Image (cartoon, rainbow, N blue to C red):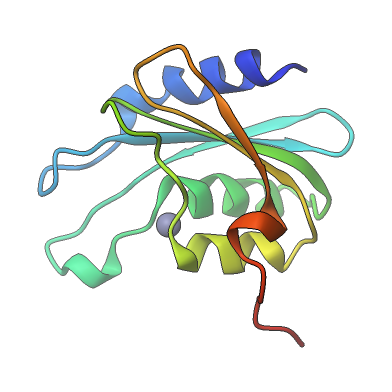
Length: 125
Ligand SMILES: [Zn+2]
């Protein structure tokens, strides 16, 4: 699956994001090593610190279905700026190995990173 298709799948779930506090809706789609896609959105909470990001929501859905190996995660948001994953999400993704991270705002441009570019010194076992 190409990056554009995966970003499209992430954009499809943007409308389901629960972001009444920030108004910043994010969608994510993670591709397993064998080609399945799981999606997530950000889910905010009145207790702000309990908010979960779209990336971790997508990963959690995949892990719950029994997947442990991933090749790419796509993250899409409505703003002009690309939604680079936060440090917490990078660390949680790194737990399952190195994958590519592709991001896109509302423009068509898609940027691609290797996870170790975004998190060069992860916390390890
Ligand atoms: Zn995050």
